[in-house]
Length: 255
Ligand code: 13P
Image 1 (cartoon, rainbow, N blue to C red):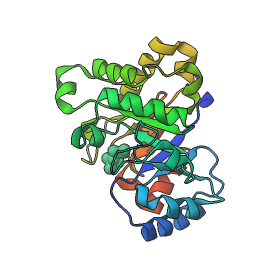
Image 2: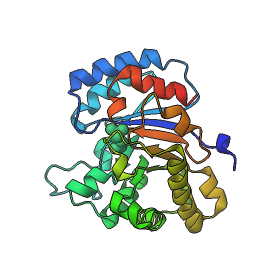
Image 3: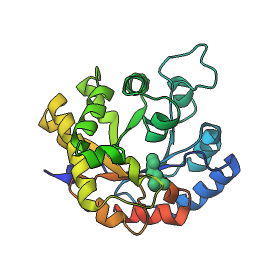
Image 4: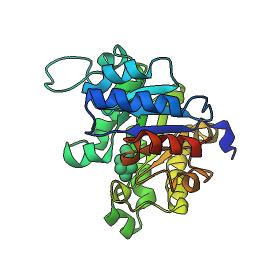
């Protein structure tokens, strides 16, 4: 398998952190630190309210801006929600779908994840689809089954031509925000389960071309070991994406 053929993508997920002013300041600092770092795509997924400031601060740099969620309907009576068109018309290129915090706290299911994935891809957004097992599932020995099920339901009805706009992030829930990072071997294995689910749906060539990220307590210290694994094509980074120097160090590790 030739990892070099795949696009490496280092993406930050700010979650519910940073005001618009803080977003501008962080991105202004980051854009200088990542100048000329062409070895990977660089993305920051930011809270909706930060999008205009983030897009402005990133303009003319290699940093792309993403959102953290998107609704599956085009428009209508969905108080508090944001549509794919609202995102694209605001300069957003990426969107995270199915993050475990959305699944855990906001009633996201595999079916709603699937609807959001399709709406976002149809609107021309690049999707970072998150999948991951909780600790009880890992302890039961059903990690592979969980990852394959989440991946297959999320991609139900997605045509092969749209896979070029899809990234999947394997994020073991027990590793998120806990400081308990997966070992490089566990990350490689989990990413491999995701890739084989994609192979079962779309064939080997499509699976080998897909960018699969690892996420969960990735930081400037452990990034190069994780990114060195054959199935790990990038990272989705929470805490360490809030500090320009730390995030830039992870971008460096991906070069
Ligand atoms: P942490 O890097 O803070 O563990 O968060 C990972 C994550 O959830 C990224 O989406």
